[in-house]
Length: 458
Image (cartoon, rainbow, N blue to C red; front, side, top):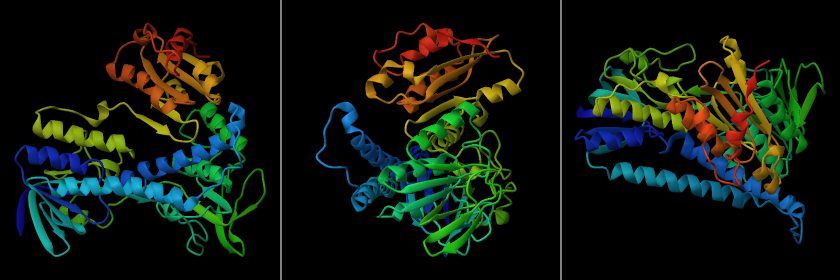
């Protein structure tokens, strides 16, 4: 048995930088990765998908070239093998860089294999037993495959397997109307596929406010995507044209037939084959590792970071998990997950940037609220770019004048939202940002104007 000061399981966003901090502090680290370095973000999440989104946006813009006075010689064609190769290269370059960094790190020993706990301080990697007083689980997650009728009788795609496609499906049916599903839906529609989105709930992205949900639906439908909500009973069956998806809904046809089906109904943590029971590490009903506010588990000396702890399914929250653990262990700080301001983006086009509460959540707390809303048709930068879909919205506490939440659904929304995120993180009143002098012409320049137009919520 080989002893180390620390063992890190999984090379997602939290693992490699944690190894860097621990080894820089003089510790020896055993780093275990069973498959691809870089985790979900690098291999099946942010990097390849946003690369594909960029290709889809280029195709969409080319089709609109005449709107800008640009005349193309022929309709744009999609070279899907080249599109795929570009996304593959982006992922491969990042993955290779991460692995080289870890293997060259003084004090870090990389083990390629599957890690399983044998006790609270012993982990076996294939046939090699390792021991350490500190163990960090960064095992990530994968697509959830629901037990819906017929799911095991037909071929289907997940967010991982769809990345292997080097041709455009004739008709892609996306089951799941949330973040992952909608990004792929718009992407493949822009690549030239017919696309249908089937969602069990009454509206898309149900965690968002109803006006945000409806506007996203409008954006997708304007591009020719069929959206079917309230699909209360979804079943799959083989069809000579591919896969038949039957639905039990309040409107629309009872069945859709597609050449391909993408399951985008959620994620599950990679915790079911780590031997957590041997270490006594507690999980919840869905398999997520239970952690305290400092990301420690119920077992002293074991922490869980990233997607597997249920505290956030984003690259930025996983990286923040690393920051919290490293600051507490090495810098004498007392950072907590509960101090983190929730923020994320939905990368349809135009993108949705979100920080803090929705106004629905804010109303549930019984506060007196101020709300401001401005359509992107009244944002000069959006008009100049010819991209005026969406709106920006802010909700604030009328008593404290602090921003509770905001959404920017519009061109540049994923970047512009950071001005509001910074104000929320700083804990200052919104009039601080209202008095700012932003750069013209930008989307962000309208935020002070929006804040000056805040009105009591009805």
